[in-house]
Amino acid sequence: MTEREALIVLNMSSSVGPVRAKELSSVLGSFAAILEAPRNTLSSISGVGAKLADEIASWQNDAQARLDAELALVERARVEIITVEDPGYPSKLKEIHDAPLALYVRGSLQALELPAPTLGVVGTRRPTRYGSNMAERLSTAASHAGWPVVSGLAYGIDAIAHAALVDAKGAAIAVLGGGLARIHPQDHIPLAKRIIETGGAVVSEFPMEKTPNKRTFPMRNRIISGLSDGVLVVEAGLGSGSLITANFALEQGRSVFSVPGRAEDPQAMGTNKLLKDGAALVESFDDILAEFEFLPGMANAETKAAVEPTLDIARLEGNEKTVAEFLEVSGESSADQIIAGTGISAGDALAALMGLKLRKIVSEASGKRFALKK
Image (cartoon, rainbow, N blue to C red; front, side, top):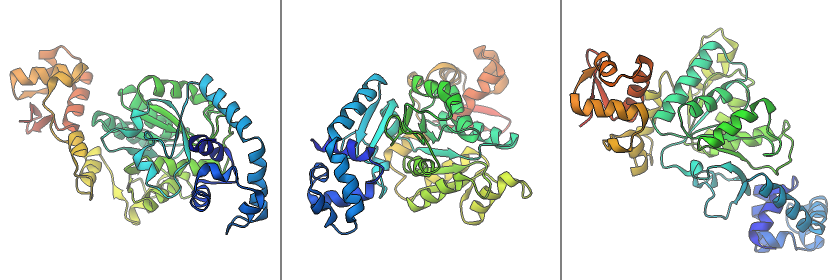
């Protein structure tokens, strides 16, 4: 059995997690050796013991059959598996100490490794109108800045963030708490399809038919933060799973952002506590951009490309290109002049201007006048 095949098989086992598998590999010389070692050899390794040795040995007997059945499911579902030793494994995720041995991906592999910073957006399953509006607004702004957004496809803030990215033609990444053949909640299967169709990705570390449960969702959360450069919590109670994601982010050295809420609102108690504990306060996407601008290691060429001026108008699309071409000819103009000169509706013109401002292509002067940055 090859190393890649062994990694897939070990990833399917609930007995051997990624940390234990890496420890065993270092002792035995390879991942494949774990599935070939005699029971007495396994049980003699420090920290393994008889019970785990028995469980591993039981997997050895039908490892190839399990692998063949899993790969057949993967092929039918048009899913790709990336192991931790494959070149396409996301570099950010590989940094964490318990990086999954394998990732199942449906959609764009490139979405997991774009040069722009990646933002995790999480929050309550029962958001207020304020929380919903903030999640949509901030996720849309991230998309306009060219940032991928990671979330968990759950009800509430997760789904709002994903939908905002899809609507804005951004790269949405959904991390599941179960296998790709067991998308949960099933109500969000259409949303998962839209994510894939618009250049995003649906991701899981679990075997295809793994049913999500209370244990798998926290495991999913470490991947959301692991794929992200920073995690934004929009609304969360004190017992929210979003705080688990924020804690993972801190452990992994990621930035944590929080949207403030009313003191008496139960849905704001978790986010307000994060602010007390030192999370960066976010009222607009500019707050996130400012934080990333001064983070150690983030002032690289890729980050600058995402937030600094790009005057190559030919690379723009849709209304943003139309507005930029108009400003290139007319110079500094008011919003009314842009609307009249381009024939775009007021809403579409303002949305295009916001996207161009976030990417630092357009600047806004006093009197609500706009111009291309030089």
